[in-house]
Length: 335
Image (cartoon, rainbow, N blue to C red):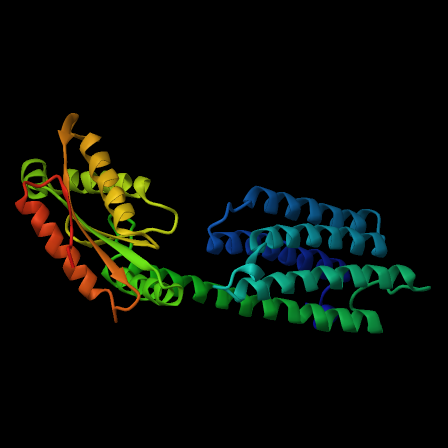
């Protein structure tokens, strides 16, 4: 529009250009927050756009004042940018993202440019009366501010790509029903825990938990109610764990707990707390109270083991011992 302003009146270029600019600013605020999963703040964005347009119109058509118009428009743009910065806050400390940091500093640059332009205009003895006037300040501002949307667009695409990659990563490692990690997630977590155990010369506790007679729940009440029982079972297990313990779903109604830096006695105490918590819980199915128990096999993995598979097999053998012992009990591998 600046390039073709000779075909239009200066006022129409000014009003239409600011309308498009303020609308784009508002849409960017909503779109960025939508991508980040934050509150959209569309009311604030709309209000800023309307107030900004009214102020620019008044200072252009009713009471023309170029310096005040630039100051007013800059203040509105700063408010819009601050809404974006609040959504991106903390992105540079997050090691899993670089796009948020790029976007954050791009918007900081935008505020710096607005401040620099206003200071430059107010310090000039004869300030220009429009951005189309080819002064050094206007030329530098248009060039630098023209790069800001390009940087923001690149950052926006990178951010969207990072979020998609993270979602795909989670989908591959999180059980969609229970929200705990799946077999792949457990395998990767096991390798990390085992590496730390070797460095610290510590052991890792392994618990294999199986819901007793769970097939009868599915057969009697259906899979939907069975899924709800599984969710409540997972909540019971999680409440008994420490902050650095992990629980994952091996398959069906079988779950694996990895508890780093524990001795045999501590591991057995943890298993017993889980078993007792499940036994005390009254699971609600179709308005009826249903009792559920679990059998637990335990094993200790040392840092000297090449992987966690041997400990998993020992915990599996201990689980079968618990089943043979009548279920609703804990057994630990002797070797």
